[in-house]
Image 1: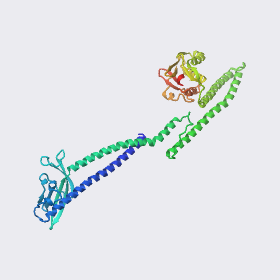
Image 2: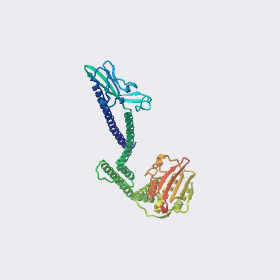
Image 3: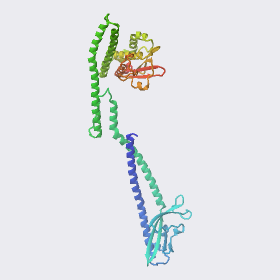
Image 4: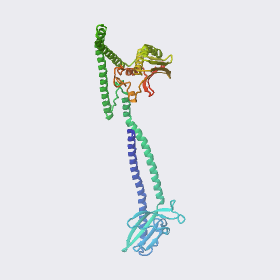
Length: 465
């Protein structure tokens, strides 16, 4: 679950709990108030009746309706002596009986009274709710009990309706709380989202970017400062690494060139024994590979430091054919058949020499890792939707996904033994990728189990640049 969702649920749940607590308090207060008034009314009525009874204790009570605060036909009333003899009963006692609960002074009961007998605002099941109050009195050392009740079915229905309304209000509050808390969580997390977006934009090609620091020196400010310090260290580390590679390559270039010249002079001597000549030729080949490695390192270092190109109109079809012409003898010697399917005019705006180097690296890689017998090389190019697509395919061993994901990394080779028979240093495709990046294009590698490996290049067309 995302942090925004967690914050939303926490705020919404807190809001709901607060709303339920407040609503419960209000509901209980609203229930207690009418019951308090009804209980007071019942007590007042009971005291008025007992006041009349005191004039003739022990005798059946004859009620003077005019002296009572409320008419007796609205109440269920029963007056009993200590032997439970009924001294007075109101008209409502004919329709139902209300039990006496001596342990309680006030309570509620529900009784069944059909509508055909009397209308008391019964519910759908002819049930009527009563509020009951028990009043005891002592007159001339004799104990009397009065049970007085009032129908409150209408009040019960109002309370039930109020409960439904409160439930609807709580649901509405919860939904509004969800919307509000979701928006609030978004505002709270917006700085973190911005920091995350900036961090993802920062890579080895844009290590100079930094996270803007806000005015408020809060936890996010501290986080931004820490991340910026980490990016400073990364930038310095990358810069030192590139400087080291460039410096080391420059330092090695001259001594190796001198060694090559010296060995070439010695190899020209006709008096060399065969075993010495073989050793010198082996060393000479190793120095040539090292020379190519140093040249590739210098080229890659220069490409990584370069941010812009001297662009000109380049016909990629003609350039590809020129590079292939240089490889005719190599292809023939390697017994590799060539197939081309190039549109006549594939124009791009780019650096011609760097695009030439791109093609050399791709074709050289396709030849180097082709089959030893019956090898095939296929080059296709076409223009699609303001973009130029160029693919270089060769027959060769299947490349697993783990290797495909790293194939454009520096010094990475699918051939794990790093045998000298392949001659590569693992920099050719890294250089190709950097050239494509400088041209604003894309490069990808795919491998099929039927024995075809393909590198596809996508470059912006001339009018797209």
